[in-house]
Image (cartoon, rainbow, N blue to C red; front, side, top):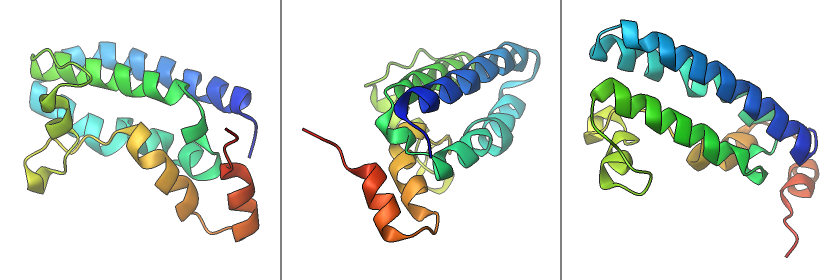
Length: 130
């Protein structure tokens, strides 16, 4: 499972890879870039990490979403702020009028809890001290 520091290190590696890919997406058309982002470069690349580690406990995951938002903003050629309603719409599913780009922050807790494991193990890693 790992501690928060090792999870943050793994997420930083994913952020670096996403930034490299974001630079390369500029050579594709907007539609092609969105299809590639949606189907293979965002959450599918992060899915194993989200399922096997409590990534939602790391603040680095928000930075991943910020990089993703920046890439989507450059692909669609619209400046999207983090609290902007256009970002909220972009992360909606396509059938609800969005772009279908998933936010890592919003799905991380569900992805971690969805993987079958003994309940006491999952609850042990999700306890947040106050």
